[in-house]
Length: 312
Length: 312
Image 1 (cartoon, rainbow over the protein chains, first blue to last red):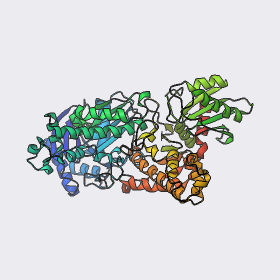
Image 2 (cartoon, rainbow over the protein chains, first blue to last red):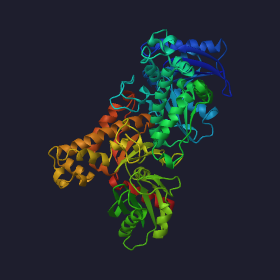
Image 3 (cartoon, rainbow over the protein chains, first blue to last red):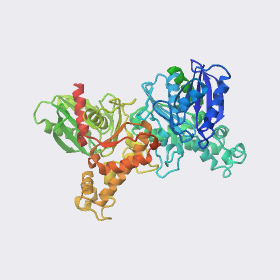
Image 4 (cartoon, chains in turn purple, yellow):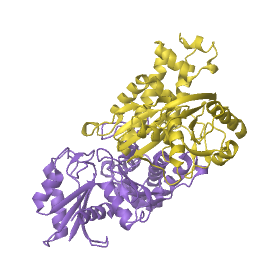
């Protein structure tokens, strides 16, 4: 039995993945946040893994971490939304659980899953963008993920898109993920609560600080205007950023994964429109399709399990 | 005898290149511009090639074109600073000159030259940015240039860096090359002529519209404050854009080519400083060196000649 664990900035999702990429059972936990100690996060992962295993023997666990993983898959060097900063996460958890553990960046795991079972199957080049708490990314070339000199390729979320723009948890300002991510979605919607009539007011019990991304997604589905405008804004910024990346990398396909992509065309339609508007020489090229990750919000954990399986 | 011709937005530089990459003789012409007819540009190329050949037989000519070249190296599909728009440039010139002609994007040619003879020799991954009239680029991976699905990878100059920013010749607004390129350098300096004391006023005979990039470079070398500030601004924007690209692509090395790179550290120092400031997780990674193309402004034509030689 192989498990994958997607360790995001907001939630931890562990799952058992069979040898055809199907998720058999899952366990969900809330990520304790960036300001807790490392042990607390690792306790959370352990609880999720044990719930899925339910006493059965585990062959291997793959971790998809929302952070900068070193080229050896050993340490999380830096993570804007998690407390790890150089710890040997892979070895610590392998020792604690007594099983083989493998680790990669979450977007790289999503890319691996989507190229094996999902939207990027059979595609030569694809740009993968994961929209969760922040933005992650991966560039698939000839079925392989571009790793980069430090093993850190794909961190597109911290391109500056607005000079002197919003402060980012990474320490920079004006980062793309401040305008297009789960955090951005919630921030934009939150600012309208109490200002405009919205079902979000009830969903968060009148306490804007309790608002979450899934609440905004649900409200948009119900036709709520504030929620829909938040998606329009985040989707538009997604497309503007894609415009620059598609001009530079010229991929055959763009795949959007991560939790926010669960909103489907509500996110992707404004993104396609903005991409088409902001892509240089668009009349002289094939504009790549922008599609949702086919494995949905589970693509990260499926890729992590694939990683564990392929290394075993 | 193999020739390379760098067809830029401002000038055409043809040269004879020997089998060790040394440029034996060159001919320089002014690019007629984007609004002339295609024949006029091709006459200019022909004159430059004939001057270099000087009656001697030619084995092959390589063209480095400042535009979007198709994956076959046959057509220039689109060029913000040149009149070609889909013409079979390669075949037209091969027929006209009666020799084998090969063509690629200018930044791809620079990348090929720098990886063979120059700054990127022996490097696994490098980001090449060419700063001429506009910005071109190429991503070298394992000694090969990333081509992309449409053969258009590397067009980093048209990433939006300022929302609702300056209009670009490509039809978009806020493109990186509007803030960091030869055109940007001249625009910034021009706006100060007559406002602040500057040697540029004499260099352009009091006619700001006659100001050129090489004049600004020369004035900066002489200590002119207006010219130096123009380089500081263009260099800073170069580094900001590099910050996003290095985060995403994680190259081992960044090479800056094109005419503006002739200014050396006057351009590169502010760029390094801005890159270091705007790169996510910079404390946890090796920040790649930013170096000038070793073959200087001739790197495009050397790469074009290499292309002709390698195909022959």
